[in-house]
Image (cartoon, rainbow, N blue to C red; front, side, top):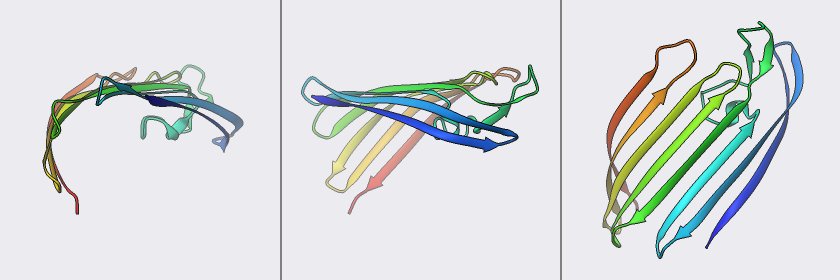
Length: 154
């Protein structure tokens, strides 16, 4: 049927002239849909710093409005749907985004793929997607990509 997981984080941020306790929470889940398909999701909120949306925000930032050092607030979520077309062919469509409060960063990514199990040891795939950056104070970045992959298991 599926599962749901809850997690919390409490950490001491002692750098850049501040000494603050930071909190973050996460909920993630996996739900079976129909016979073999599934839906996955994850939501993180609070002050996770570098522990959510890698390389998006450090633990502390300088607030441009006040010139003070602060712990950045972040909200990030993602979800995906995986569909099995046959025993050897599947696709996943996904979307994820993250936003910060102080520096007003916003990043998002979506993609769709097709993966073929060629034999017991080889999978090949293709994915088309988009990565976008819409941070306050910079020109927006919107980049499409096409990626091919092969995975050999032994």
